Image (cartoon, rainbow, N blue to C red; front, side):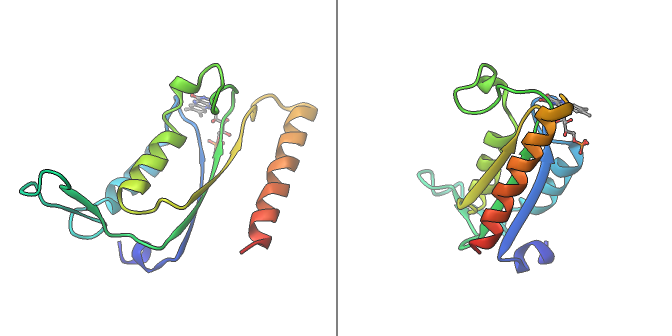
Length: 131
Ligand SMILES: Cc1cc2nc3c(=O)[nH]c(=O)nc-3n(C[C@H](O)[C@H](O)[C@H](O)COP(=O)(O)O)c2cc1C
């Protein structure tokens, strides 16, 4: 918890596992989304019972998927509980400035995979250069 709160910038790399995130990342999230540390809960205030406490932070999420079509406008967009979930749960505690780098077709191999990796590396280098 202290380590998490001490950071100014977060970088998360995660695959999609069964339309969501791996259980290890979920376990980490369950350690850091805590009443009184990362958000407040005041049920006596029905209009705004939840208030975020992790403010003025920046997050980068590299989200990888073996298949494709899970992005915005994709055939399987409604089955994507990976990136929407991460935006929701980190937004809930106050981290709303999130840049997603998404990579699909990770299981295809061959030239398509090489090209996808090169594109993602270029995007990450561009983002790191702008820090
Ligand atoms: C248990 C498991 C579940 C997966 N579920 C999905 C999925 O729902 N959709 C998808 O596109 N890829 C899925 N994949 C593929 C992974 O997202 C992809 O291969 C990723 O790069 C694996 O990362 P890792 O090697 O760090 O585990 C799954 C892979 C595993 C092992």
